[in-house]
Image 1 (cartoon, helix red, strand yellow):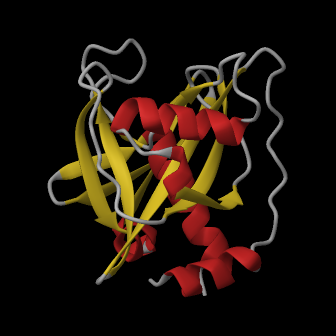
Image 2 (image 1 turned 45 degrees about the vertical axis):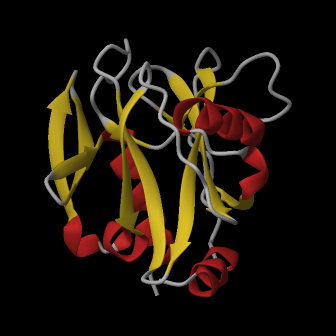
Length: 187
C-alpha cells in the first residue's frame, strides 16, 4: 500500500464513536509509525522489555501514559516514541487519530497514525524495548492474517485478535487497533 492510497482511504474513514471510557482510566497514546520504503509502507512495531510491569514481552506500538507536561495526546505519542525507539518528533507527520479504546490495564488509549519523513536513526531504549519490527502495512491490514477468537471472562464475551508475522505474534490492543483500522479502510 502506498502513502497516497492510505491517505485517500483515511480521508474516507467513517468516524467511529469513541467507546464509553471510564472517567478514571489513565490517558495514554500510541503511534502507528509508517515508514515509506520501495516495497510500500512499513508499520513500525516494538517488543516490550520483559522487565516492564505492564504487558512485558508483548509486541506493540510505541507509546504510553500521558504526562502532565504533554500538551496533547499527539505529543504523548511522539514523546514516548522518542523515548522508546529514538524517533525524532520532527520526522513524524500526523495522518489520522483513531478512536480511543479502553484497555484491560485501565488506560484510555488513543492511537495516532503518523508517517515518518526522512531517514530515522532508531535507537532502542533497552529498559523499555528489546526489538523493533518493520511489518509491511499491506500484510498487517490484510484480514486473511487476522485470527479472531472469542473468550468468556467474568461473564462477558471478549474478542481477541492475533496476527502472526515472521514468527512473532501481534495480539491484544495492538492487534485490535490494526484489525479495526483494517475494517474501516477496506476498499
